[in-house]
Length: 280
Ligand SMILES: [Fe+2]
Ligand SMILES: [Fe+2]
Image (cartoon, rainbow, N blue to C red; front, top):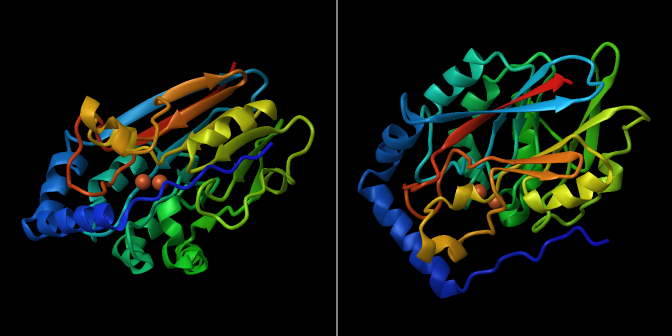
């Protein structure tokens, strides 16, 4: 079965309009506004999700950060409060689920120091989002992340021993923009009896993960619709919900941290997702 999703392509006129709005908002102080309104104390949402999994070896806490969209509305220092809150939860593992940049790979440099400060005993893992393939410099992005201790999983998995069992963190390339997508290769490290946590920027992977009985898929991409207004809902990617059960697999979709187009969110706050995986 084909896992790939048709990329959404916008007309030049629409892209020019959105970019013009973005530049105007930026010139009017959009970045400072976005930081104080959505990323600061009392504004940032910390969403906690609990997964009870039969036979899971021990409790594991995962902090998920998604859709930073470094660029006009997110730059150096803007994630300070986010990182403080992540550290306060003392996660065992950190998952970064793509869309680090907005338009240009160099935008990554605006958040690289802060990403490099993330620490978790089981590791800091990432997958790429559709924006991260801009200019086909995804390899450079992966290199920069690696230099700061973030391991990007490109159709690959990492097997983590948890005492009486193992958790495989499986990461796939983006379903829309990657040149190669191979879920089977990503799962090559999985042994019988292992538990699988899948990182996929695009939430559409969940149905395929359910077939493999993965415990969860962590995704982003939709921004929770960012401007969750009836007449704007069709402007962004389809929004499957924040938590959806697909048989044995729980899909958790982060609303993300950054913004595209305008430095605004409505009905879809910026968030960090804390996933507590516990033995049942
Ligand atoms: Fe995004
Ligand atoms: Fe995306």
